[in-house]
Image (cartoon, rainbow, N blue to C red; front, side, top):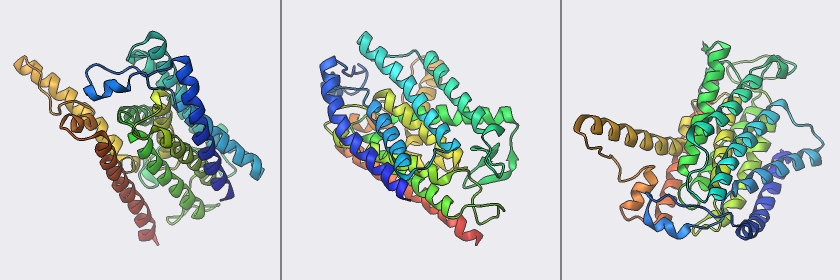
Length: 361
């Protein structure tokens, strides 16, 4: 438990101070954000705001986690190494996207195919090692499971290894892109991530307290390294908290794809490694709404254009947070209300998680 407090505290401090340094340096280097022309016109005033702040979130998380391990004199677990690989790997894909935007002075970075290839490579490598016997612990537990899970493994839903890796790929790419879609207003994605990663920290602590040592049963959790995963969750939560100080409206810096893809990848990693894959749909419900709004918008536009020759839209603009802006809501109002929605989803998810354990007693 000491490592959890140390990881979160160190990451918070590094992020809070490091983001201020990043703002100054990125401004000097001209690392400013380009704004899409088809978005709300109010966003044009944000052009030139420093971006790639996700670098600070990633660095703060790594310093917080490894600092906690050094102070407590404990070694990182296999699950932790895998999750950090996914976190940093997705961040690297986002960094390339952001860097191209900055160097080319345009709102489009990596082409969609190139970005998907990068995400796919990281996700597949993660999935392969997460299911590999090479990372089994003394009781034969691998970091991930071939069984589909909701609140724990569903025993009769076991997949062949290829399909299990394909499912991991789907979860990782979908979640990283979902957080990326939500990162469109000052503090929206950052604040939401604080709540969802905080929830996973609590889930990991509970799983550790009810850990199956040798004989798995219905009232304990057969998850590898839950306490170490809780340290990473605390570190990411602290890093996002510190970054939010500077990212809240009016944002002095944006996380960019560097941050959003990294955070989305980490969320997917937690869902997979804690055997709560389907629970992520509830905990990350706000990100699901953002993604569904884009899917509905695109599908309806293409369908109506094919039938009538004129594409029609369900929302004024997607993702849905921009729709409410176009209706005249202030950015701060949209962000706070979406934070409230996130909080309700998180509270519901944690309630379902705890209720299932109580029902098994």
